[in-house]
Amino acid sequence: MDTEQAKPAISKVTPLQQMIASCTGAILTSLMVTPLDVVKIRLQLQNNPYSKRRCFLYCNGLMDHLHFCDEGSNKAWYKKPGRFRGTLDAFSKIIRNEGIKSLWSGLPPTLVMAVPATVIYFTCYDQLSSFMKSKVENEDYIPIFAGIIARLGAVTVISPLELIRTKMQSKVFSYKELHLFVKNKVSHDGWISLWRGWSPTVMRDVPFSALYWYNFEMFKKWLCKNSDKYEPTFGINFTAGAMSGSIASIVTLPFDVVKTHRQTKLWKYDIPQEIPFQDMYPKEGQNTVPTSTWNIMKQIVSKDGISGLFAGLIPRLIKVAPACAIMVSTYEFGKTFFLQQNLKKQEIHTSALVLK
Image (cartoon, rainbow, N blue to C red; front, side):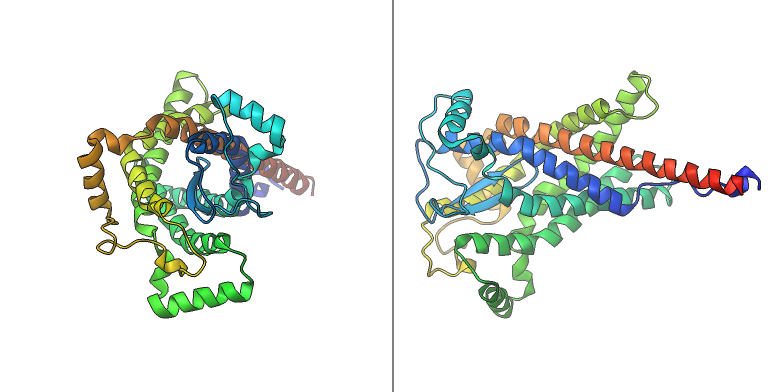
């Protein structure tokens, strides 16, 4: 049999393999970045620790999460901060007094949301990019559109899960009680209420995604060209991921500041058990607390000036840039690995057909 006739179509990475690669990347990123955020929170709160039943914001560079302070429970990872003189001192004292596992005490709640969100996001991006490349000639703007659609999809799917997960953290709930909570919320406020907080998240994450993927592809091509590489290496992907993540972080920081302000209004309130979850958020006009993005921006600018919209830039860069670099380089490495395995299987299959 002729070799050309026996050769099957070029193997590609399957959606399942893309999901495995993105899942591995999300887990690895969380493992490496979580200790930094645990230490950061302990340092920030040592002068003003949270009391029980208060809320605080946690972010590992991939996603941010709202948590209730339930110190003392078996599932709680928030602990009294202690007295630290700096980052290295915090690392050493936490390891010495609480054990090295305490540096990853925020890992479980991170993985619950970060892994499925990242799997959906990266897999959708790759699938959309491949589809668009087969339909259009100019590929320069494909990363922007694919990044926007993929992020919209991921945020939309995860938002109701985030609401339910936060509710579960507020106290111990049985599945029956949780089902009753969702049923009552939908009956009173409609299905749209399950996507509360979707708008500010989209305003921050969608521009970030568009900028990130466009710059990542551009930096990757530029680095390959200047290093005489036909295919990007792990180092090229890592560098491109860090650079594109840094740019996207800077540009979208005002929306991140607004989202944080909106969420951390909860910090001013104790959360008694009898307050319904859907009523915990203070509403605009009831407590003179602005909730719209524009009003919050105006409040920040009037109080702190334009620089207030870029508060926390350095900590965000320190956390997000390496998280983006680790995630995308691990993901691309995983895809390369699976592609090589697929090509080997294809060669074996071709050789078997030729021998026949």
